[in-house]
Length: 282
Image (cartoon, rainbow, N blue to C red; front, side):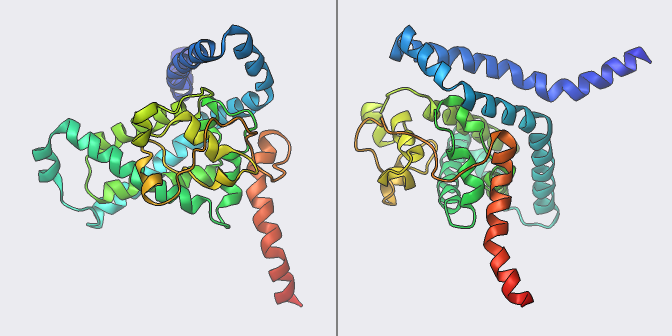
């Protein structure tokens, strides 16, 4: 009985323990980058200033790891399975086989980022913004801010993968696309003053993405891509006038702590539809 209980607890803790290792590595890497780019004293001052926001991000990470992430993974698997069972996936196996593993991964990342660019623009539309505002509400933007997403917003982000699956991309290419875009997302949220120089003409940079998170600044409605700045340049949404030293965050009152963040879109949508309900009932 004791052995069975231990095994059951181990299975329940597996998602959390599997996430801890990569997270520890990220903490070490981005702490080192902050130390190198800012110096020890400034890095420590900024880390202390971000403590309250980091607590929120950490709480969101725990909820995502133990509940939201597994639920969305099951939902995505069900959607992909439904596409296959109803013949809604393109038969492109021969194309990827002929192309080869690494070129296929490259295609998956490029297409995934293109889809993510347009999906991100839709998330800034009036009706989806209340959920997306949670991600942009961090007033001390760091690499850890990437994970601050509302479950509704996170579910929308899976649309990229579903479309790639409908195009017949192999599962391993979908996984590679997810890993690349996730960890590059950590990089562009990092609090480092890098524009990537000439590479910034093709790749997104921390400075470019910080302008996306800027509060009350003209450029805050720009820079939607994750990996490639090419999409923003091509579709007129690129904005990088220089180093971004302005405050980050959103104008809305997001409430208190994690619960306030989760409740914000529900409250906003309810307040938007309540006058219509009153008019219909009168």
